[in-house]
Image 1: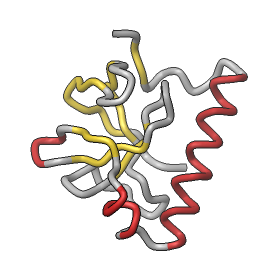
Image 2 (image 1 turned 60 degrees about the vertical axis):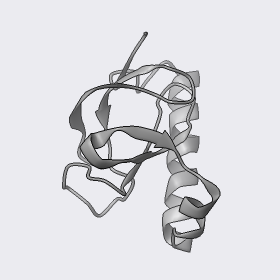
Image 3 (image 1 turned 45 degrees about the horizontal axis):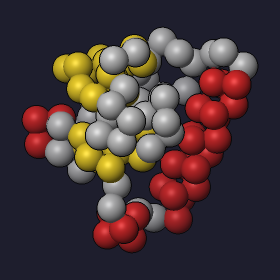
Image 4 (image 1 turned 90 degrees about the vertical axis):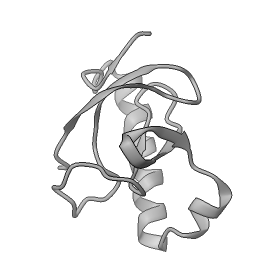
Length: 98
């Protein structure tokens, strides 16, 4: 399981949901997020990239091209898990309504 990191409050740039926690987009990293890492919005499942200062933006095609096959699989598996948790009413602790 990935460690959960508390973030400075930030809105998802796709759906405007207030995000207050993050799991860095790699199963191997216990480190807090830093610029260049990615995360997933727990509301809309958009894949987001951390910028300097932990600002977020939606992943762009060039960002996707920079991911390894394993990272892409990890992203899609995490998105599927988030969707499944939302259908079951679980996994809601990481997001707050705007």
